[in-house]
Image (cartoon, rainbow, N blue to C red; front, side, top):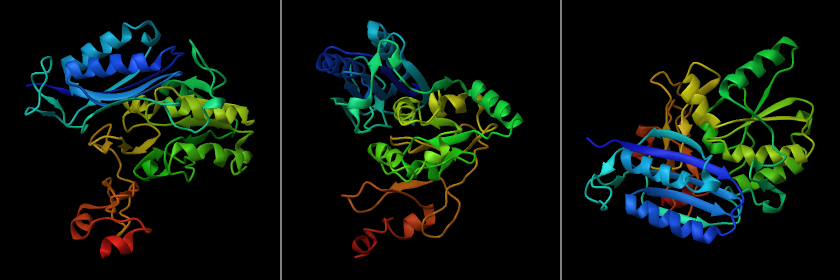
Length: 314
């Protein structure tokens, strides 16, 4: 039986010809029957692709053969399966059910903070960011600071709705609906009281933290760290026995993943308050709001955000 896998990866590195990289990556993925989303800019590459295990391994090997991508930061996870009704010459078992199509684009930013002029990248990655911590080093930092009574502040670098079903214990979750809002939130002074504290930024796979920690450092946050490899690598290391609580939201058809059968359910249905990790788009097709909603409420009436509730209800 063919095994389906999802590969999450990124690399901050100068690229002289992003469009040539786009054409190469598109052709490579199509030849292997891979689906997903890949963003490329002059500062690097950021992608999530899924497909048959052998095809994904071949994709990673060929991508890493390109010198600039030799040290891609890579995370693996289980896929939902393969659509055997669709196949490519090099992917006889079909294509990933986790992605509707393949998208490969060139953008100004590989993660959209709306501040490309603030990002400085060289062959070693982002310059001026926070100190990277492995999951084990994160625990060491928390224990070390606890001895002096100086608590570590966890700062969520994701969209706020992602934190509704999973987050680190006691984390600060800024009220942002997309990453472009972070710079304004930091500039507002709302978190200036954290400038004298140890702050650990975290996100899904580590890429948003790379940018966020550099934005915080340039704004005077003195002791900034970032969780290297993000929540995914932390979950691979500690599962649900550490400081993480709940499920991890992912931007594909799986919607969320758990690190063990013991994952806590911390989400609350926006209608009835029942515990759930289920998330669904607002029923208004023009709206991109994600809502936490239990099975029963979703079956009773399509979910709608506050702005579109009356429209959806008819």
